[in-house]
Picture 1 (tube, rainbow, N blue to C red):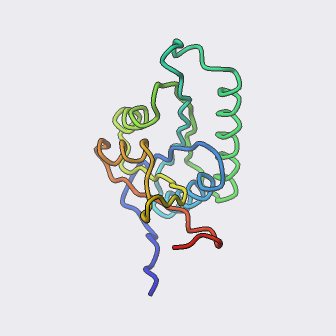
Picture 2 (spheres, rainbow, N blue to C red; picture 1 turned 180 degrees about the vertical axis):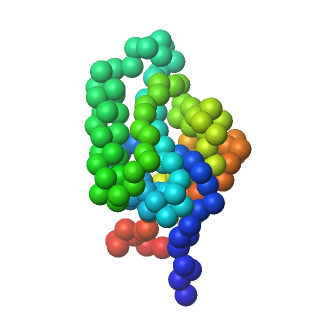
Length: 155
């Protein structure tokens, strides 16, 4: 039996951390649909992780350009999904998890939607450090959208 997907979210502001790729695009598309149905603001956040040995201002131009491409793609998806109230930005930080939680607190975010790739290790699925940090520390709803298993994966 399949459960009915969440169709409306009680939230005024939804944040989606984005880092590109298929999982991120699928998650952002779904968040657009949620935001449109809920008449919520949608915030796309790309975190540029800067190594500890560099000042935050010295993020590589390649990572900054990549972030701009990712945010431009999210804005294109929001237009495809007819989601009008979208805010996209990037921030520089040492780690993505704390940067996401700070954004949640600073912007008064009501829900975070995080995409997780399908990963199986030692017989069970695993979330990454960023997803775990947000789950443990965000003062709002946290919703995960995990990618389905690839067809060739043994479940």
